[in-house]
Length: 297
Image (cartoon, rainbow, N blue to C red; front, side, top):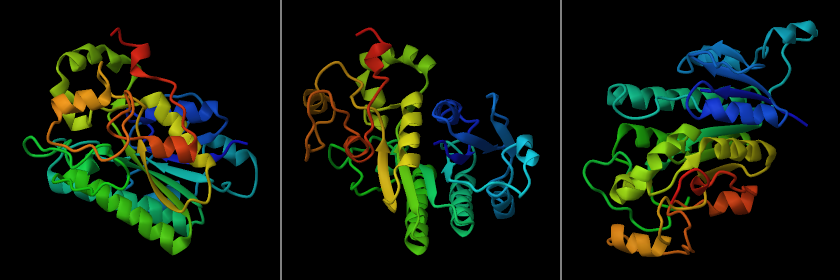
């Protein structure tokens, strides 16, 4: 049975693909954003999620005009998906990036918890692993990158995501709710596969993304699986696809292009250095959009 989901940031790059996926699965979605999402059947509530009053209102209102056809006020929300954020560094000054991302996440999780919503899914990031927006050429501590990694970003964006994970954990513990943080890899839309031949020809250019990615449509599947899976409390999941963006096996590739980083766990075949084993084993994720379907090797 479909769920009622409030989705913040549905008008962004990832949201534009994830929201339609959720609709196809039978869910009802309210988009909460500063820009309208042009998807039939989805109402956008123009909201500043750094304002706690607006967030409380957004999480407790009708999903559209059709809600007024039945008496009794807005129906309960089953889950909140929080993707709204300043999406990277160098869009705003660092202090604004950090402030907007941390305050908005606090506002969303707090409002959900205090309104009795039992499921919150937040967008964390691969940047928590400390290399994506690092100053200079920084090596990873080890491969594969798992959810137990000692995250150590030095930038305002990655730091905001680490703080958001701690915020999520605090509210999950305090209220006994499920809050799942998705460490989302480099989001790839269908049109982005045109750039992959260049990535394959110049492997160092993908080091900051750990030679990993997430197809935006597969991210939709991950969010849907998170909505369906109850009772896990606070969890962190790497949200990435199965395989490395390279034409040679992962261990051989890393020995050549990341020789200073030890391999401390299993990396079989072409398995991505940013590991998604947890979402496969715990959530049952099954990749549908391997990059090799769209790129000639």
